[in-house]
Length: 113
Image (cartoon, rainbow, N blue to C red; front, side, top):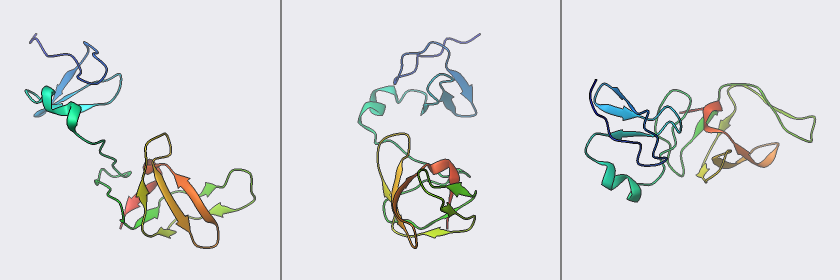
């Protein structure tokens, strides 16, 4: 068994190789071997449900009906959301949806258009 470095984010010793990347099973951090010292300066990358990298100002489409908490409204599948803004936290997309208003979404429920 090879000696792999610990995760640079959470210091877990359980990192494993996946093709040319190293992956931490505890915090899901991915990095290239030998670039651990550069990861502290990298920004968090947010990906959609199919793995596309999201950036501020993108347009995304909702892939699942989402109930709006505290309301009887539902965001339907296929609803396009324009000009998203990425934020830190569990709900990592801040946006405004026509007919509903401002809300936060999880990136796992959207697909980049």
